[in-house]
Length: 173
Image 1 (cartoon, rainbow, N blue to C red):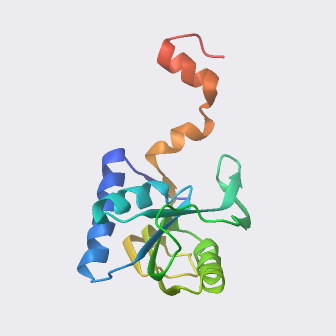
Image 2: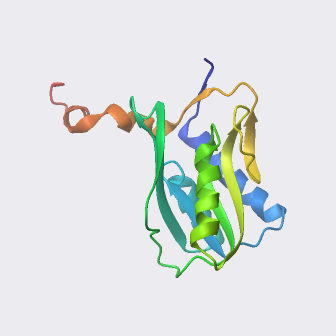
């Protein structure tokens, strides 16, 4: 399996590029929704750039093996937002589209549960070739579908004891 290692600076540049791509293609969205966890950082930055409220929907299928093994998709029952009900044109953001199952099912879920949403477009940083779902906007198409190592993944297996050891200089547990 191929691997792609992403630095913090590269990660933020990708998000900025995605925001600009949506702007340059002229999509004027009314609602912004990110998928937690992977899309939280993407959504937060796009929300700040566009000065739009951010809605959050938790959806997860990668829970086992420190987030490396895909299982059944679990979509949260509720969306968290301070921007009122989702409506009009919706931009749904996530970090990547891997198999495509998550985005495909979430888009169907949104269309079924939110009748005030008139259109859903998707935006991701990475689009893997193995995906059955094609996002409307992406920054990088990955023909070899590598495993992506994002800069914040160090926290997946850090734990509080190792964090304390790192920050306070205490012996590792």
